[in-house]
Amino acid sequence: MQLIAFLILILASAAPAFAQARPGSAVPAVNPHLLVLPEVSGATVTCYDFRNRYVRFVDVPDLGDAGRAEFVYGNGPVIMIDPELMGALPPALQVFFKLHECGHHALGHLVAPNSRSEREADCWAIARGHTLAVFDRAMIESWRPSFAQSRGDLNGHLPGAQRVDFLLSCYDDPSGTFARLE
Image (cartoon, rainbow, N blue to C red; front, side, top):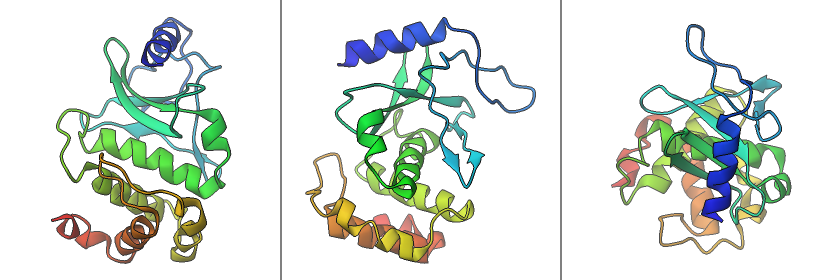
């Protein structure tokens, strides 16, 4: 599966340029058929890593997860999206997961992961969604059924109900986000 994703990204890098970039920066080369441009309230969301490099979103069928942050040698930072799994989620939860993966890049987790990386990415996503006026408290609370079956994992994702409670605490007190991670 990793090899297929890598080959897709290699092919994507050879395609014509197609993406929005910051003024004055190079437009990344991405195959427009693989590109996923996440939208929030009708506006295209872009993602930049901790080094201010543009992060591309690409569709990777059968990824096995809704999304995954990766750094692919020769292609830079990417967020791979499984279109089927992501498409089955409510729209606001899709945005949350895309922001969560962007958070891994923005916070440098691919370079220096830590035991709090998943919770940091969760809070980063909630803070960004709150700033963009995409999430409100009731919406986050409504995600409980979607997270209900999640048992958490060894990577640091919290179990369903506990994760929603944590997301709500991030929403309620964004300034105390990282203090709560200790």
